[in-house]
Length: 314
Image (cartoon, rainbow, N blue to C red; front, side, top):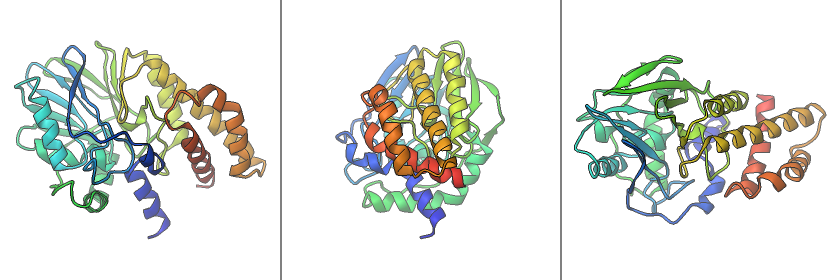
């Protein structure tokens, strides 16, 4: 396997290091009301898809409108998508009419097929769609392998509508604005903002319990800029791709952390220091403030420093 495919595989599963920290798998797709007509289905697992969690390691969120359901992310298989579909039916008889795929990582869009019978649009960015088409079949095989087939068969159903930067829509009477992260986490990341409700749906661009998710094919400076932009919107509710709902304070926290690490890496890399030396400096400076704020600070701060060094040479 060449280096590009290795990076791609690591990005597919999110943070491999966190697989040992994953919460106990739970087969119940429980719906949580976060605001009027806005709901979340939060996965209890984070990290590597396994036979135990059957590949379910990411969140989905949905909005019940006057004319149908707007769903943000569909999970990592057709079977998971069908469970999300059944969970939605516990709170509304409205069918899913629109799907937003936040980005191209397998755990956020391979469930699209479960909604093919009711959707009028599956929506994402041009960049995300290109990656989906390039790696979709490989993603299905990978998830089937690491879950030992418990993920079940999955048909590839790609997005049908593409978003432009700053585009605004109205879905069943609900005003929605779309924000691009400019490849902050991965190519073509899309966030969804409900301006009246002041709720942001972030996919993997936004975090809560876990450290910010940076990848080898993301753009860290653009991720930092996006996080500060979202914090300035002052959302009352922040819905993430993994972990529970959070607030604007967490978004600012993540931006400050990433900014500090990125600046230290840039300085030390320019001065010829090693990643190991930088890691010691970063931990000494930041662990007292941030160590207790994340479930995975120690393993992830090491990965962040090493990956940021790699990105300096890219």
